[in-house]
Amino acid sequence: MTPASAFATPLIELLGLAHPPVAITFSTEPATSSGERLPAQPAGCCFWEPAQRRPLDTRAADHANCSTGSYTHGLTDLAAAASGSDTAALVSSGWITPADLTFVAHLPIRPTSIRYEPLTVATSPDVVLVRLSPSSLMTLQGACPDLRLATRPQCQIIPLAHSGQVAVSPGCAISRARTGLPAEEMTCALPVGNLPAVIDRLRQAVAADQAAVDYATTDLRRFDPLD
Image 1 (cartoon, one colour):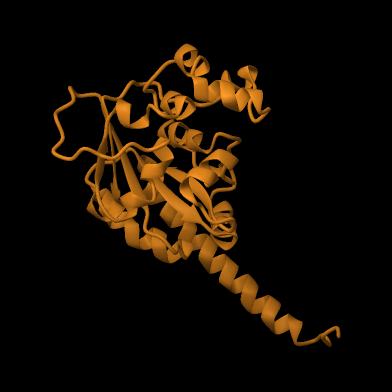
Image 2 (cartoon, rainbow, N blue to C red; image 1 turned 90 degrees about the vertical axis):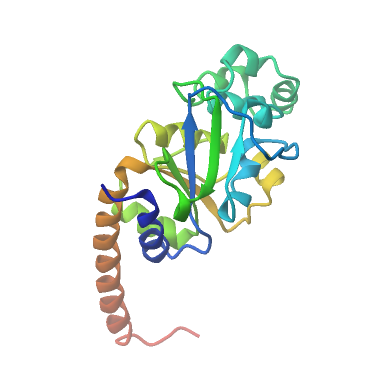
């Protein structure tokens, strides 16, 4: 079996990624004490960018400042998420409604820990997270035309990928404010089990795009530019 870490370089090269992929692993084994206490963060999505550089082992308490994110990651149930003071603030702002919450994707398991780390060092993760540019999305959509465009909150792409879907989010206002995700980037979650097939289709999509670009570039020479 190909180790998950071997997929990092093809993903970077085929999608033209500016940032390394992040692996996410869910464990339902009894939690063990971690040697590192992570500083409190407003939400689980705040672990994504630092995990491009180093492993981060988190527990439910590390996600607890975002009730909706705790729900999408299986760390709490819908009733608890809906009753959170942060959820109340989002509902009162009109950003989300109580009815919307019932349609938000969530993990079917309750993990005892969640590990975020560079894909290059991961062993058997469940989901791979990548940051896409519009051109990267163009390539990915060519390879995976059935990819899922997720609504807010952005973090529901994680349980969607865990269920086997390639899921892309344009981002959500609250996550962009918390993480500083640039306006020209979006997030995508890939099921690890699908990566060999996705990479094969990406190679085909890249080759097809290049052939189309060669044709269009040659054809363009027939036309006079507009002033």
